[in-house]
Image 1: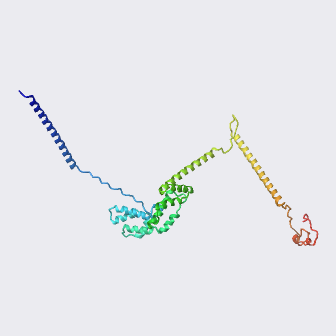
Image 2: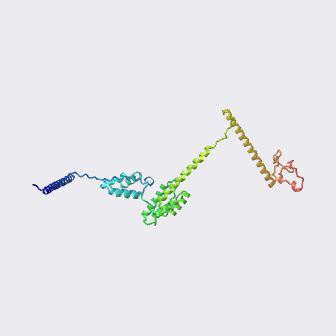
Image 3: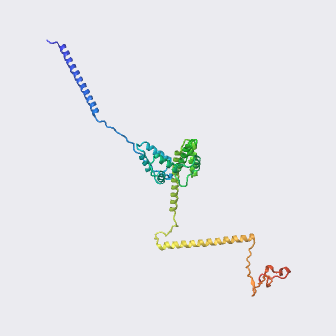
Length: 350
């Protein structure tokens, strides 16, 4: 007869063995899958990405600052920075620099270089000699202080012109001014054309001492925009007030009557007659005021002489006749009758 306890122990041992074998088999399968995945990733072609920087576009150079917006030094600096990133020979670099030139700059280089093969530095030297700054640092700084905002000039253009002058002076003489940003900001404010805007910006920089020219220019543009909007509203309001007023007095035709052309013409003619009467009254008043003024002047300065001027008389043979003694051959102003006590001729006879 079998022992139940030993049978139970045998069964548990068999179950334990089967479970351990299953777990080992699963772990082996996982390890195999990991190995296969590693081999697949190793055999898979690796895809590489190459990022090529986009070529920077350089603005053409003509030698005229008003068109290019930069001077020759800024152009040369930008071109040299691009050439350093390009793997080209000297001829290709030379052609690249020539392709960027326009107008006077191209003609100047052609005259300077000619048909001979040159290097980019020869082109730069020619451009500096032709379009480089001829003024000294002191002269540039004086031009900077004398620069004012022109009539109708934008704030951005004015600030750019100031910045260009100051940068040119500092390039020639580093350390010429102690604080470039503060000097540029203050000169921008002092050169503004609008006195009211200038006063407002002065108050602003006193409150915010660390504000640079960009901040000041932004405030100035906002202020100008607000002023323009206010002025436009005022003009529109005034125009609306003027257009809302009637150009002539309204015509009352009475209740139940229709306004015909003849009635309108009659009203217009009445207004014209009224205007004529007003002009006549104004003329009469003007004449009365003039007469009153003349009468006051007569009382103050005496009555003016209104006697008619007598015409000179002559004999048949051309001899003058005296107004005082009716004598012949002399005038009244040289008459001797008055001196000898002879009676004078009355004015009516003369």
